[in-house]
Image 1 (cartoon, rainbow, N blue to C red):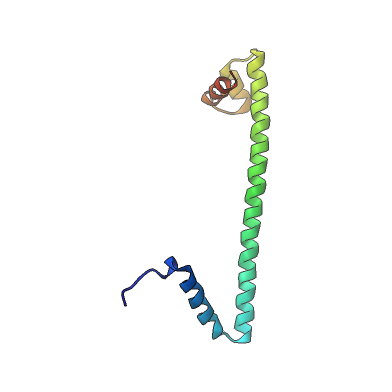
Image 2: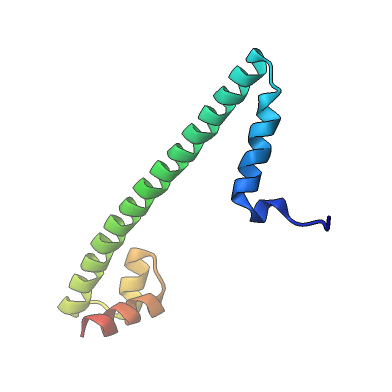
Length: 101
């Protein structure tokens, strides 16, 4: 039989996993199950953290854009001064100014 990548066949991967775990003792099975729960918890935490960080980033980005827009509209500051005030590049200020026209 030619060699092939078993990971390409998810059902075959599942069958191999079941066969491997069918020979476990009770203690090994319990440990394996606990490991799977731990991995699932870690993955869930990562997804939650990512979603929270993404939402916070969007909120902060919108607030910053609105503040910059207000300064652009006032016309009291140059694009360089606005960039320095908010810690962003002049190019970003110019992009926002162009987008708001």
